[in-house]
Length: 197
Length: 197
DNA sequence: CGCGACGTTGATTTGCCTCAACGATTGTGG
DNA sequence: CCACAATCGTTGAGGCAAATCAACGTCGCG
Image (tube, rainbow over all chains, first blue to last red; front, side, top):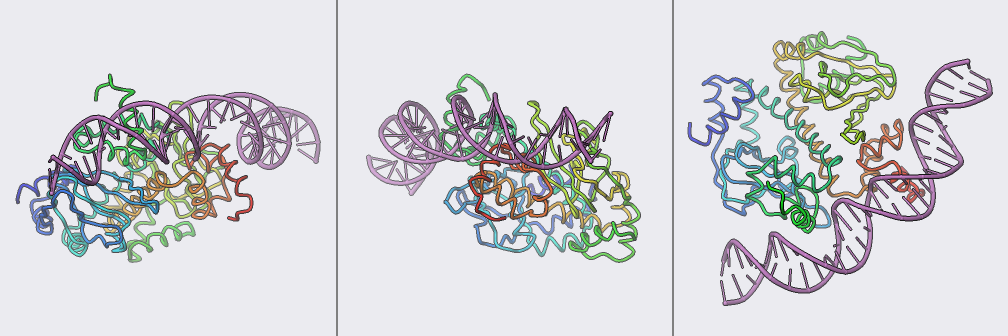
C-alpha cells in the first residue's frame, strides 16, 4: 500500500475495524489521481463518475444559481470526501462544480467499482453507512447554525472550527461558504481587529 | 405483519430488494407505539434510545437556542424517520426535541436491537447506507436553498414541496422551519393573496 | 510590468426583525 | 355547551443586519 491509501485506511479504521484482507481488497479499487490547481474535476451538468478522497491539497465544492452567484457548499482538504453525492448515486446530471484550489492528490473510485467493492467487502456497506450518518449530523448542525447565529458568529465559528482551511482560502471564499458577501466579511474583520484566531 | 409494518416495508423496498425472510427478521425488531398529540418522545438533554418511523400523524423536530428561540429542523409525517441521529448513534445527550403535533403512530427500534438487526440481516446495512446518503443530499440542497433563495421563495417552495404537511401545521411552525418570523410569513401571504398553492 | 482578481471602505438601500396592539381561533375546565 | 384563556395570525411603526453599488488600493501572476 502506498502513502495515499494510508490516509484512507486510517480514516476507515476510525469508523469500524477491518482485516488486512478487507483493506487489501478495498485498496485495489482506489486509484490515485493528481490534479492541478484550478482544475475542475466535475462541472455542473456532468455526471459524477467518481467518489474521491482527498490525500493532499484542497477542493472547493460549489454551485452557481441562475443569477450567476457562486455559493460554496464546502471545502475538502486531506481526509475529506469529494463528490456530487446525488449525481454519483443516481448517475444523473450534477448540480455542483468541484474544483481544485491547490495542486491536489486524490484517491478515486468509480461507481461500478464501488458496487463491486460492496459485493466483495460487505463491511464496506457498514463503513459508508456510518460515514453517511455522520455527514447527516454535520449538515443538520450547519443548518441550525445558519438559523441561529449571526454572520459574525458564523465567521468566527468557521475560523475556530477549521483553522487549517481558513489559512488556505480567500476571504471571498469564506464569505461564499457562509452565505454572506465579501464586503461584509471585510467589515466583520475590521470590527474585530483586536480579536485573535 | 400488521398494517404499520407494511408502510415501512414499502419504504424499504423502494431502496433495495429484500426476501420475505429478511423482512420477517426486520419486522421482529420493530415495535408499534402510539403517541398522543403534544407528547414529547424526546427532549433536549435526553439520550435518544430509539429510531422511529412514522406510520401516522405528524412530528416536529426542533431545537431551542440559548435565547429561547425554538427552531424547527423538520416535520415528520407518514413514511419519514424521527430520531436524534447524533444522540442515537453515540448514545449521547440530545440537542433536539421531538414532539407529536398530532395523535401519532410509530414503529420504533432500540439501539441494541438495531445492532442486532444489522447482524442478523446484513442487507440492512446497505439499506440504511442508501437512506443516509439520500438524507445527505436532502440536507445539502436545503442549505443551498437557504443561501440562494429569499424568505418568500423558500416559503412557496415549502408549500409546493410539502403541500400535505403545509395544511397540517401553523404558519408559526412554517416560519420556524424556514428560519424567519411568524410576522414576516404573514406579510408574505398578504402580498401574495392572489397566488394559489 | 501590467492586468485582473482580491480586499477595503463608505454611502445607501433593503429584507427581515422587533415590538406592540388587537382580532380570530382553538383549547379547556366548569 | 359555554366562558374564558391561551395561542395564533395580522398589521403597522421603527430599527438593524447585511446587501448593493461604487471607488480605490493591493497583491499575485503571466
